[in-house]
Length: 411
Image (tube, rainbow, N blue to C red):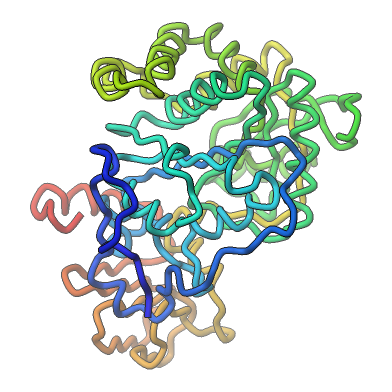
């Protein structure tokens, strides 16, 4: 049995009053056992001096109808581990920062779900966004609030909905990144590419940096947008490129300095909100300023301009990483017999014959029978059924856009 504790919300403040109720179809997924597994316990507090900022947002379109706008994928257990993606992120970061130095930035509609899944999270470390503004505003708000609490704070930003394997390699890379951040750099962690992906951005490695306790750190020459297949293959052949996993480590003051240089209006708006954050004026200032902020990703806002100025570093890493960005990548992460379809949920509800590959999610309680349909994706929920192929997984958001026009409550 899974428990979301929605009947005992810990918060009574207006911005945290909305609880993200789990969709009914999660009851049919045996692997959806959120909170069934406890969070790990720390024997000693971490000494790295890092604050972990976790942007937890999303429109619920990439894995629709499994995820919804009111219940994005970070609130789901997609690996059958008994921990949701958000909880797994917490578990991963806990040894690096400790519970007191964890900050979650999420939409106002998701605050209840976040707090129910993370009972160890302090109320004061939940920053609620009135509306989505991309990663720069989310991370920038955390940096501005942190800089007032701890002027020497070093923060690391890690998405709530990514999957990472290789704990020791991850912790080692983050530790190096903290050392480089203390030297004044904006630091990203470069993922070793395992294939020529056209779905990720790339980072070009530059010269090695002479920073103590960071032997692998390199300067970033430039960031590359998502390439075509031929260009991606060329990147891999050089050995000089890493995937951009969207992980950044930086002193809060350095981030604000870089933001002021590239986007002063956004910088000033975030500082206005941060100044009012611990006061009764928070809600009124947020309502006035937040809608005026530019919607932009941190890569475009500060990382790319700072790289041209030589102020961005990268720590090449060897841990496994996936952004769980579509049903195809989700399928790759689930176990299956050779040539068989992968199943998320109750395997007893799935019957296949002469079928190779694919992903089947029986989230309605109905039996699903597939005959001779290779690499098909079937997501069956009580109120919506999606049928596509793994090759078209990136296009699911297109059908969601059409569905939203005719059946908005399904999205």
